[in-house]
Length: 79
Image (cartoon, rainbow, N blue to C red; front, side, top):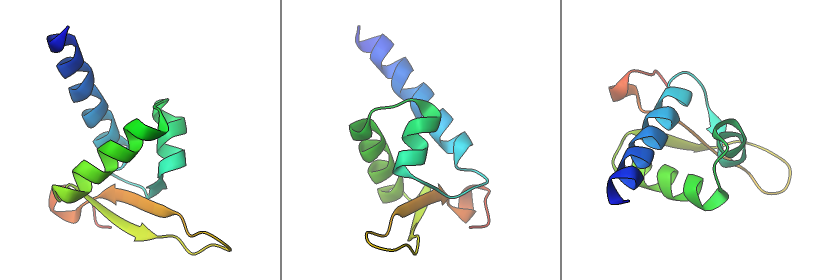
């Protein structure tokens, strides 16, 4: 069971990095694209941002500004 969880986690991480390597997406867009739960997307974006793999910006919007993420330039994307 633990091995299955690790494989799934690795697959989620890889898919997230591939998705964000050439575009900015907010958490809702990531969730919809990868069919993940809101909590899963929250954890992954927080962890990968903390590790320096993702960069974050606030998208200007009326009301609540969404935070968008993309792959950090050091990892192959010019944000």
